[in-house]
Image 1 (spheres, rainbow, N blue to C red):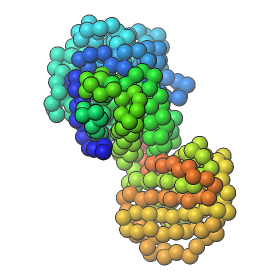
Image 2 (tube, helix red, strand yellow):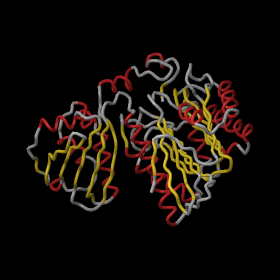
Image 3 (spheres, one colour):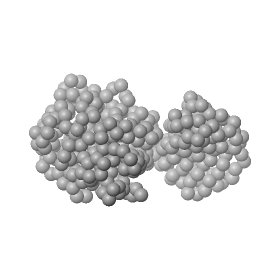
Image 4 (cartoon, helix red, strand yellow):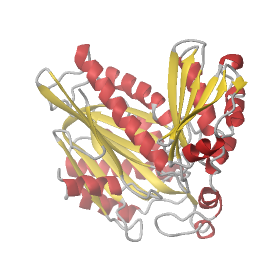
Length: 419
């Protein structure tokens, strides 16, 4: 059995830290993850053609053993040219100098304002401070997860544990993100640690599959950013070999549970969002079509707007399915709305049904609402998660959204664009 908790349980052999380096005015803005021993690693990155310097650097060293991750918030180091890339390498080199190993043993993650060079004096001092304050307790875990938050309203942490061969395995992770979130890859920085022993090939395969089923199935505002990254480090210190057999199945499930939990937390913290929407498609022709349909529904601005108004406008859902490009038979679709207040069916075999509008309103007024699309084309299913589209969201993300330093959109124009 896999036990999942919405907080961090630190795997064996990892230490964390988070400090204030002065990149942001007050809040924590630099952190380090460090493993006692080299880890196998897996990672996934933004599909945006404009990639931040740390993403370009990390992609050049992916797939090799790692000792940790150095992270900062308040500055994305994106669109900063060759200087930005050299600054990223300098961050990794400083970590290696202080913590051991080589520069290529450390991933680098940055988030914050786009188009502004890193304040390297503060960055280097921050790495020195973070490297000297590593720890394993709750205070250190919270500080590290807080160090990457930008417009987030709270930290996002999930852990999963299971036993195999008499050994306990822990998979834990934390994420940042509340705006610029959309599939491929959902805009976030995510950091996953495990004490399972997993080969590089297996770990990278599982990271790709898990990201595709979780972070690539969420949508808040339709934007993908320059810095999206997901890192998974496996140091093997539990002594449990999870690259094959039953242990592999348990580990794959635990990793996906952690990423699924983080993905849902990202959506629930969407900037200005008031409702969490879960879309499930059953009976699709295959997994590809199921995912296309689920993502199309959850990404539709018209569907999002209907949920904001608690309007049971099922036609917008069917419309989003229709333009998705997926293969399905509209004449065999059943649609339902669900929430803690109940469940109603609005469409049966492609034909509209009369339904209790008062009950529908109660269902859609809930903070967490579900859409269920039952097809009759096959046995595949998929889930996607999103939120409603509100006036406050439009204002915060498109007009005057404030970052953690309290700068408005106009103020940001003096110092770069927000990430």
